[in-house]
Structures are given as C-alpha cells and as structure tokens.
Image 1 (cartoon, rainbow, N blue to C red):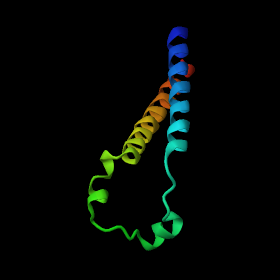
Image 2: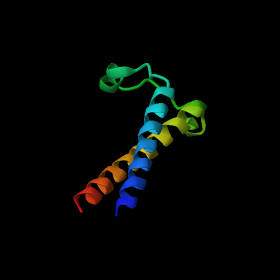
Image 3: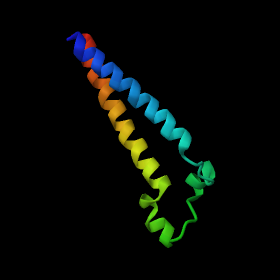
Length: 83
C-alpha cells in the first residue's frame, strides 16, 4: 500500500505543478467582474466560434482537465491515506 501512496503523491505533485504553470500561461480576460454582471459583448464572429482551436482555448481545456485530475487524485489520496 505504501507504493500506491507514493505513486499517487508523485502524480498529485505533477498535476499541481501543471495547474500552476497552465494558469500562469493564460492571458487575462479583459471583461472581469463587470463583464460577468453586465454580460460579455462578444459577437458571433469566426474567432469566437473557433476559440477552442486556438492556443488560449487549448490552455483552458488542459487547465480544466488538470483540475478534474486534481479533484480525483485528492479524493483518491484521502481514501488511500485513511486505509
């Protein structure tokens, strides 16, 4: 069981570092809190429709994936350390 704890802890640390790096690589969106309250003023243009294919879209997607992995690993480590 100690081997599983060690492996999960190493993977957890790598995922944590990946989230930090991915978060710092993303550009700040200009709308901010006022954009969330009022609503964004983006129109249906080519960039908005294909945002997932750009570098920014890819960074967001990987951040979400790493966030889900972080949550799953947190639960798994909690279960393993209780045993």
